[in-house]
Image (cartoon, rainbow, N blue to C red; front, top):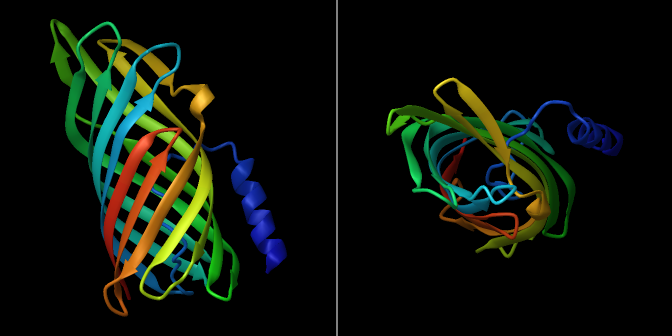
Length: 227
């Protein structure tokens, strides 16, 4: 089992496919063939772009679904809606109204003993808001990013706090009429820290709250149910 976990982690880290940044979900993983569902709000308060291109913000709402492939391995899916607010340094903010947003990811539990857990995560998210017209120009935007994360938690029964780190990148893809440009997030702020906790309501319901900082300023909140 340890060899399988290690192999999956290597495949993810060196995968040529992009994985998009999102909340890390914490260390609670559904058991094999079980399902978690939830409702989540994710707010990117500030993410700096490269070469003094300003910053981006985004507010997203999702329906969540996690499936336990094994007791230690889950697939995470989400679908919902989100907006983008891009703030250039030399002009007014561009606000793109909310539209489709979605993502996917997976988590691998690496350790589970004496109330301690550690989890490797790999998440994707992509936001596709509506176009806006600025002057005589049609502006379109997509927010892409990707991350890997390592989290550790301790279960106190009434609350399960977790902390960890992540590597992430967010791209702001901006199209004005037929001219398309991809602007990356600040490469000097690619590593960030994660802090969050799960709060059980009963045996099946729980709340998750999470904050992310240094690479970006972001937080999330979700209410979840286990089938």
